[in-house]
Image 1 (cartoon, one colour):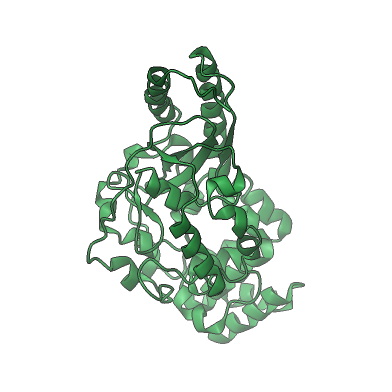
Image 2: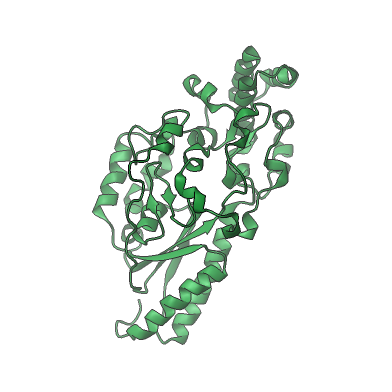
Amino acid sequence: MVNEAFDNGSIATLQHALRGKARELGFATIGFAPAADDPVRSRRLHEWLDAGMHGDMGWMEAHAAVRQGPQSMWPEARSVIALGMSYAPEGDPLALEDAPEKARISVYAQGRDYHDVIKKALKALARWLVAEADNAGLGAVALKVFVDTAPVMEKPLGEAAGIGWQGKHTNLVSREYGSWLFLGAIYTTLEFAPDKAHADRCGSCRACQDACPTNAFPEPYRLDARRCISYLTIEHAGPIPHEFREAMGNRIYGCDDCLAVCPWNSFAEVAHRHKALAPREDLRAPDLAGFLALDDAGFRALFSGSPIKRIGRNRFVRNCLIAAGNSRAPELREDVARLTGDDDEVVAEAARWALNRL
């Protein structure tokens, strides 16, 4: 814990320098919030979980007690440093909507695994902060860094820290960077001056709600993950429910629709994007046919260093088969037919469904 007698001028100077260092390391935005648990955020989380809207994501329920606030995880925490790194796309994320023979991959997954990029930058910032606090005579500083693999509610914390607000699609929206921000957080025993929480700027707009192909929003600011294409293609391991298959179209990994239509994206310039998050050329508009031929080794080789690798070959090919069935492209019949005998029954079932569609 920091000595309570620290000089306020020193910590204010450190906080100002920290903002500059964060931007030097590639973060587009940074804000500060108190680490105290928020009963409103906690109540909303438990209501969402109680409604079963987290689907198969049992880890969210299992760690709900520590997820409800920073001090529930770490009682010694005094401040949260919320950070955002831009991955703004160069073109229209919906451009492949009318190209059924192509595979649509969410913008965030077209480049390097953001976990690696952000974690590296967070650790560098943390090392700098500890050293600078020591130089300023602020005593021993403890901290913890998070991307999104820990039970941390980055989006409401980002709103509390003033870097954006949770839009009606439940993702964070920034006036400067739109909907294209990867979020990270640092919990620390330092007591920084908090920024003002960001006001909601959605107004009467409901573009994100209307754009959702599967009606995954039962109401504004509330997502039913069980109906969300991002959840279905990434988190859900079993067969894709039939009621959502046609609506998936050619989306094989994630879905950008609710983000892409947000009017605030008009301010999100590709110049803000971290250079390490540029998309791979081969994943901008890939052909479905090539993905249908992937075995496990080929999948791992192709997606080494990509966030797509985490779902494994079987789930990925399952998604591609749904897209193939929706394509109605007869040239895919042979590749699809071969997969009706796949060792994985979920893949084989998806292949039978796709073959029937073709």
